[in-house]
Length: 281
Length: 257
Image (tube, rainbow over all chains, first blue to last red; front, side, top):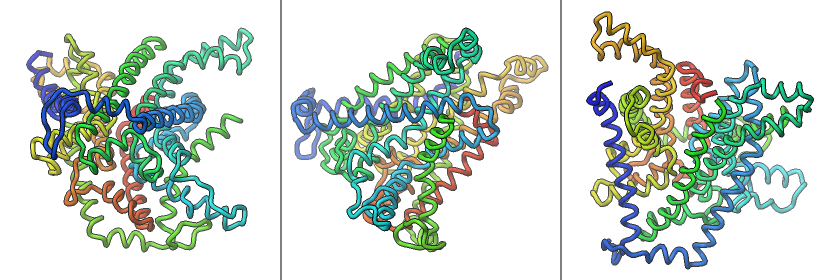
């Protein structure tokens, strides 16, 4: 392939990405260092918005809550996703395509709809509470929504497919002979799992966890709809600063804090997935 | 046995909210209760009679269509040198072209909003379309790459040694073989654009609202099952699109397992 052909084929997308992705992100950084007075941006290089963020207990609390929700979501997704991925990687069932549809379908259904499903289930007059009260098992509805519990349930539901996809890819590449060999050598299936399968799937666990964590800490639709603005997370602060308060520099600084966390996670993710591919195949 | 039961429960957890939304859409009552209060299509009738929902549906369909067309062309073209070319910085370029996939979309949305506002082109159709193309193209690159890596270069060389021009050899041989990946990529791009909420939220206005944004606005103020009908409709669309991907590429190939 000649250089000219390469430029012709790659050029359009690289150009599009540079102008409408890289430049806007650099602009975001510039705005986070600027000052705004009476709605006008002044191009400065001030760290004041970052200082504001990292010295205000409210925003530090929001940051801590965001990371905490992300961590719980990741752990629960891993616990639920591992058996699913394990089963999917090994199954020879003719229903396998259908199982893949089940895993992909929540991914392809918009996030607003998935939240709405949980709202119907978890609301005070929702399906679960209404059923419990109707049968006299409860007098007052359980607080299932508009709190961290509901937000975590919905976040796990939204991001579980990503965990399953990451894990299945790695689990599938583990050679069955390795497990058979360990069992021939006298290991129980349980021991073979813990000493062969689990360690070999560690790269997938790490990759899936990084992906889910990074997605969970940047989700704001779930906290808004299922959390009802009562669970405050960093992306929601960004959203409010940008679209309601119109404090662009501070909003941009918040976004950039989120961006730095994501970029750090992505860098580790790329390293891990590369190693995952080299290590097992 | 324990594995099967727990796997079954997790699938139930994944599907439950979607099933509930569909049931609520066909339920006669204002609140969804169990057992359901009888079958009704009135929420669908309401959905199809409301002008704002119909306009939003049309906008989303049109937007997803043009997004799919553009990102398929741009993404397929970009995938070829990324798989075949041997040049310095290929890995770096690979990471660069898939970066919109990895970066949280809220950040892309915020950055584009500020960029467009400074250029005075916010909340325009073109601006929204470009945003969608930026985030869907990496998916096309991925599916095309998946089929292109299996492709035997000897086929194309054979065509060329039989006298075909390289461009003709590409269109008649290569494109025929990688078609499954291209079509699956196009369908996936359509699906991602049609359902996109996060990016669209920052790039829309009162006059320019795709369906997910309209649904979100509706849900903020009312809880009636018209929203369920809209959602059930979108779930149906997603299902048709998944079947399309299954038909053209195969889901095991598409997901990589």
